[in-house]
Length: 143
Image 1 (tube, rainbow, N blue to C red):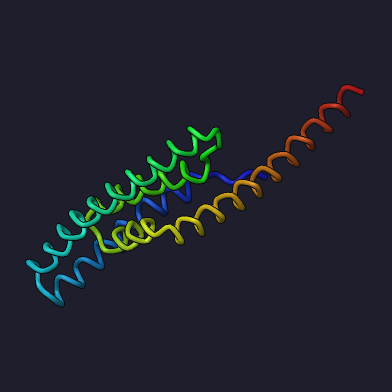
Image 2 (cartoon, rainbow, N blue to C red; image 1 turned 90 degrees about the horizontal axis):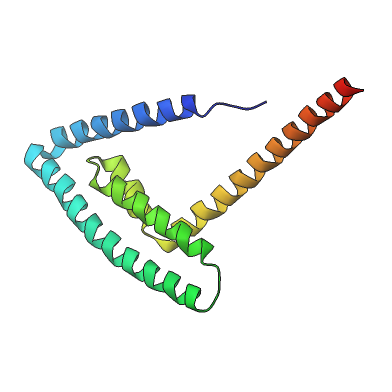
């Protein structure tokens, strides 16, 4: 049985901005609007600088692996996660900034990469089992 991704995306795109907005309001009330805006702008600028440095380092390592004839799959995944980190860091919000900064740490990216590989393998096994069952039903119908 396949689960739809639409409910998950709906939760993601409604819950995360709502929590971010609530956090910004709470922080704004506690420390003031000017400081809250400064934090938002500061994390955006700082995040952009960190993303640029990491992006260049990863691109250099990818190029080196390619020249050696090796497949840079982990580095490509790192590059995608750095891109996602950049998008999260330019999005105003404390929750998105925290996740964006976390994705800039190689150890955190390695942990996310392992989780994604585990999830994809599990999804592929379920999909393979579903396809086998569908083909068995079709074979039985033909007999």
